[in-house]
Amino acid sequence: MDELIRLLIATIVMAITLPPFFTVLVYLIPIRLEEIQAGIEQRTRRSFVIGFINALFFGLVIAVFANQGDVGGLMAMIILLFILALSFMGVTAFVRLLRNRIFEDAEFGATLKTAVLLTGAMLTPILGWFIVTPLLALFGLGATIPAIFRRRKRKVDTVV
Image (cartoon, rainbow, N blue to C red):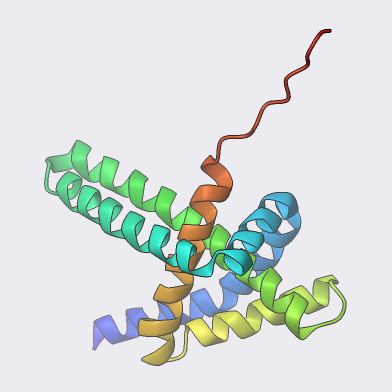
């Protein structure tokens, strides 16, 4: 019973804190989120495959580190937080994508409403927990990794 109360409190805290978090991220890193959103729209399957493979790989790495004592547990926690941060950036790009499809304007209120809708979908029992949230995380992770770690082409000045 005590665990059920903790789960309920954690769900309520997430429902309250995630929409403002997504909304603030939309306005803090708009250029990077635009690149991630383009990856989601243009290369959907590729984003899912990249996210799935990276989630499996880093899940195994986290599991190995977690069994190595205190220092390994710390490394596992750092890797987990890094992967979660990348996934949250991808989910925030989904907030932008949905906002552009639902609302005509890109104002703060529309972004907040879209973040509330997406958070509600993610926190829906059973379907949201086990289908919507993992899929959004995988797509988001798979779109974020190429957008952030892609090699930029350098401009070469030629002297004639």
